[in-house]
Structure formats: structure tokens, C-alpha cells
Image (tube, rainbow, N blue to C red):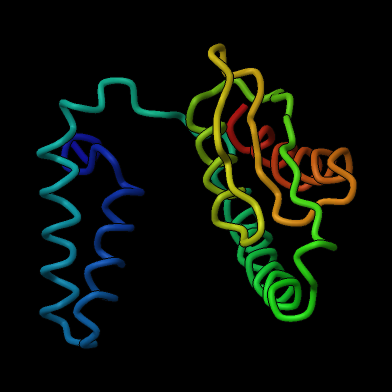
Length: 163
């Protein structure tokens, strides 16, 4: 019964939270309407999600999110310092190819999104079979170090969460 009412419980929670943040009024009516939206939207779109992604260890996602938020804050400071104080002729932008150990599309999408969210890097392309990700780094003297950091810091954790 509960699975039929809440076909995507995480989406229900996220939609409710997003609604409450958008309205920005801490009232009971806001929460109730957010719960209604969070229940109706996933229920109405459940048919379009026949193969719902499975996350074997969702509790690890909180640690991953904390690391990504921290890295975004640090990268903002680093990119601001590069923009303000580094001359263009001293910057070394590079394309970095990252071979992927991840195989699930959701994990690869999370990795690409994480890279793009972090200032100074952007995911540009993925290989046809999904075995490599092409990333542009704003200032990367050592592309191998960038590749190794992304694989160790993000991909390893996503593999633990999704596979």
C-alpha cells in the first residue's frame, strides 16, 4: 500500500522540501501543500519511470553531498583567486579524459553533474559506450593529477553508493 501511494519516496521528500523553500513561509499550510505536491507528482509520473534506479547504499549519499558542497565552496575561492590575480598567459587550461569505472547511468550522470557544479571544471562529453568522460579544467598544470583527484574523490564514492 505504501509503495503504491509513494512510488518515489525520495522524490516526494525532495519536492516537499523544494516547495517549502520556494514559498519561504514557515506555515503548516505550506508544508501540507508541499506534501500534496510531493505525493501527486511522483504518483502521476510513475508510469514514465518503469526502471526506477536502485541505490544500494543511500546513507552514503549524505557524506558525498557534504564533500561536494565543501569542494564547491573551496573551488569558488580558488577560481576567484585565479580570475583576480593570475594573468591569462600564466593559466594552463586543459582537456582531461577520465576513464570511468562506473557503469550505471545514474552514477555517471551524478559524476558529470558534480564536475560541472564545481567551479573551474566542466563536463564536456562522454564516450559512446560511457567508458570515458571529457572534462575541461580552467587551470590544470597537471592533467593527470586532475584525473586522479576526480577518480579518487568523486568516482570512488559514487561507485560505493550506486554499485
